[in-house]
Image (cartoon, rainbow, N blue to C red; front, side):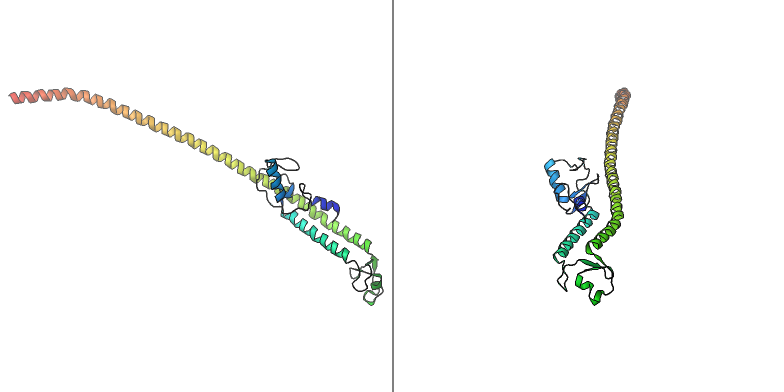
Length: 228
């Protein structure tokens, strides 16, 4: 991969190849440890690139980017290994040619051997450039698709967070409404009990007033009956 690709696969905080990358709702990615360290230093959950506040305290992992970084590191190691072994294992000559029929690098002695008799060759630099161009063309639609997926995922993350915020807001509204309803019912209960007790007192006083003269009449009649 080119140096530009390496730059694209580098964390904006540590400037190294991403390690366990996570993605924010603004679509920017960081190493998980780098982002947590950045948030601890700033004490605000915001993006280190665009400064947008992140609603997620534990952002999701960017598995697609993780796979790209692992592929890049693997290819870089292979390239370093190939550069250290860029001589023919049979003739100890530099691999300057590429056999188009066998699709492998060869030296000038291999070209004249029976193994590659009547084969087509090209300079290894030209063959490498052709292969790079093919890889670049194959990689472009994958990169475009990855970008679209990351944008869609970012939208989904924002929607999911909005749903959570809206649910919490609705929950608070429901609790507030039921709190008011409970208060109203309690006040209504107290008012009705008070009215009932007042009505009881009034009726009791009225009956008491009616019972008192009757009691006096009964007492007088009882005395008269005793006398008689």
